[in-house]
Length: 580
Image 1 (tube, rainbow, N blue to C red):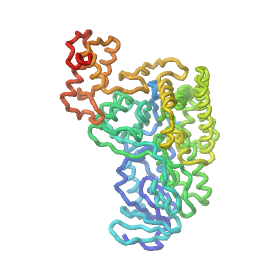
Image 2: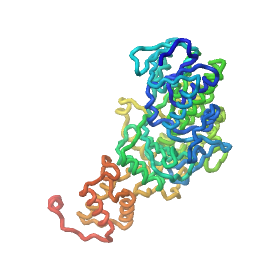
Image 3: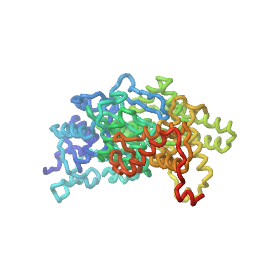
Image 4: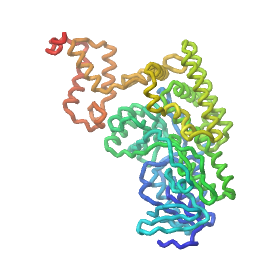
């Protein structure tokens, strides 16, 4: 299609969910809009699939309802499954509000059809923006070798993290990489809390699950950057944290090998552009998707821009409107993903407040949904959680006669207060704003080499004790501290191969296994057995793919031997005899 100068009032770069909303909002206000999309197939990637009520209301204002043809329930709120094994905490949206969840590609296609069907929107798939100079946008269509230029009154950059708009403004595209995200489609009609997003916190990283079709659930695993990503490792690491009803479909999804991957990154929402060139959505900034607020932020950016008569006032309103939700997102991810003693103490305090105080549950969801963006309210809630938790941790260190531990808690309190202050006033580096602990966890090579082993071992032991014991120092009454899988929380989870080798070694050297340990080993073999009847003996073997008869025989022999009440002392092998 040949574009003629003077035909358009606005150019929107990027036809994802936010770009389509921006184009429709501008067209409904009377503008002639050109919508450019460089890669239409990118909509099939792992991306936003949850809208908070505020984002859904934007679509309703445009006459769109993504749930119109849905035959499943969604968007009621979130159900949190604590890492201490206690009963889940359900957090519904305030005042019965509803959000939405569904497949990203289906949402994008719906919005693109709506945008391209509007008489005042021209949609150009395969058209890549190559530069912005003032109000002149340069772009190239896929079927043409020549570059076209168009001068308009309003340019809206909705083209994501590596935005052409950011480059034109001279803004950095740097971001902090937090972790990886593995996305799977689970074929199941069963969810513990149907209509809710589910957050599971007892794995190596948080997991988020929500329904995307009547028969499918999206499961997103937060995978640490240096962790193995093989299907077998993912199953062994994350499977025990899922409800039993979801484990078979999780195992089947891993076995299929159909895993979508994305990188979890963060960049604070500091810059919204200039008059005539506005940044919206991820082009402004982004954070960890645990709180699923990205699409909602972007859609509200786009819908409010069209009514703005003063750019600076719009920019200020968007910074104020998203800062609390952004701070909450960074804080929750750090607290839920970190294994430090302070994070464990704060997690326990959060669970306590959510269970006992319905006002805190409602307040949390208002912060998360962007309904309450008052920093004073968020600061009070943050200090109400972090203050008692850290003071309790400090008092415990003082009682145990650990001055270094007490001093560390005092420094931790100071760090979190500085993080809150910097975030509230838009100061500091994006990394600090996005996650209060990044400044502690990102360490240079020289610092690592200079770190003595003793304090590191002590910190690891403290973190283990914090996970094994409740906040008051008493054993947990949930029955899950001494794990259902034959391990303790925070310790190494032994794979069946190691347990099998242990049993066979005890048999070879004639040492009887005590009844208590024998029962634990049998439980371990039962719980780690895959649905195929086999065991995964190495992280490179995925579920259901193990066909090593020797390995299977070894596991079965070990299981049978450990069930015997007593062992006869065998004849010593030659190498044992030589060793003796």
